[in-house]
Image 1 (cartoon, rainbow, N blue to C red):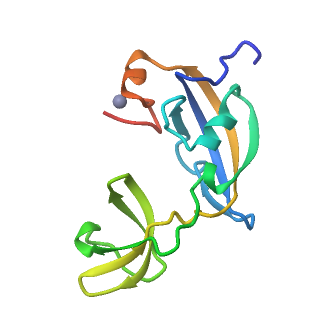
Image 2: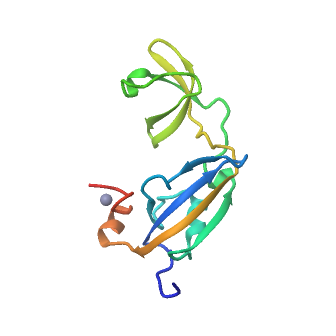
Image 3: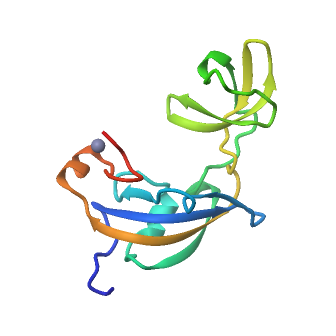
Length: 164
Ligand code: ZN
């Protein structure tokens, strides 16, 4: 293990993770599917998670608690938006409290429905874990050098990563 590559900039890390919220509930995990894959040093990950991965090797397991600023951000009061229902898949069931994926200027994000109208829904743009100190439990499965193509694209390729 001591000879295996250390996680650093321009290396790709493949890992499983489990996220716990402030109350200790499991809220999200990769363990029931493909592991996550990330190219380090290219803003692929939230800063706190990336820092915690640096210097790790395959086979390591660790747990790290992250303040909102290093994880899902601070809770922004009143950060809502009225969105046409057309922006969601036809099969979507709109209910207050439902979490939906919405494509925004800053990429796809999870939003929470606050109010449902005939043609529009009001959504809260805060991530469901915004404002919380969250804990990541991470199993590092693999660390390898990024390919030249991955470095030029700024993301990892392969299972669990970006596909072309
Ligand atoms: Zn690519």
